[in-house]
Length: 400
RNA sequence: GUGGGUGUAGCUCAGUUGGUUAGAGCACCAGAUUGUGGUUCUGGGGGUCGUGGGUUCGAGACCCAUCAUCCACCCCA
Image (cartoon, rainbow, N blue to C red):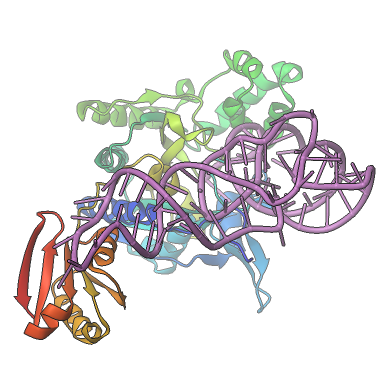
């Protein structure tokens, strides 16, 4: 038997309904905020992701679906959505044109990882990217949008917020942190000792209790922001408070990549296991120039669709449409014609086998039909069709 | 890449210290006197016990390997 690859799932009923339900409503909300749909290729040149991610950690070497195609090109299945959107943005020269550009997207992403709860090799994201606005009002705006989406689906979440500073305040902070880490290096766990070399601010992510205690007195980003970043962050907080959005400042919320700056946020939920982030985002004012465009402020977020689907309930579907069944061979063809006609206005399925009335009623019930329409000897003789309303339990006989 | 758990019917699982034809519930199909669904009752189909080796007179049970899956670590764009 040929099976789906590890970490890749088929989308079948009843999950498929959740998926469509989510995409339709999330898209509608994004449009309300002035965002337009964008579709970018699933396959991109590897260089795009290498440049956006940097040479950071395991990502490039271990976790990307990278291969050489038949033309000898080094290509990669997209591991996330932002890089492709930014690439398209620059390629279309929106960066030179200036102004405001807002996009939303959704689709499959690929990461070569060991699957676990809330983590697949092929998964789906719904995301938005806003280009051209440096103001914290836009940060607030997209957080509100994300909140509106999660609220629409009745998700229970906590909003975590932090500021990552900028090229003015981040490097000196990093120095200070390094100095601190040098001092406690010997007592840190193995992983943190490695993090210190590869990606120092990631030490705050460590799950080891000893490390957490050790890092308690470490210098924090929040207390080391430059004036511009501090003002930006305070304005955002003020807006969120005026909108009655509750949030937690989480000084441990960090991003490993260099292009992130200022606002970082995450919506987390308790019942997702270790992968508890259902959506995350933030500001990335440097990415457009990293990828060769003219410097353009940008902010966005992405939702993990599978993770969110674990938490939403789709409204029960009601009985709908018709089921057509025949009681004898001669009824089959007239029944087929009647079914086709009915389908101009309703959802219609038909049983192609001759069965007892009882069997047809059962089949109609199973198909979730509201009406069961049957042709047998009696109807054939009079040119009519018998219809039962399965909900009201009433019966009528109509002209064919 | 590392560690642990689990693989028996379509699904959820049971299967005594190894013992002869491998079970249940749900689902599916068919009946319960004449053309009336969801409930109930009866019957039926369906299993190379993940795969390959090994131990044994005998393995679904024990051992080894392998694959898959789940959870966690690493990583997290």
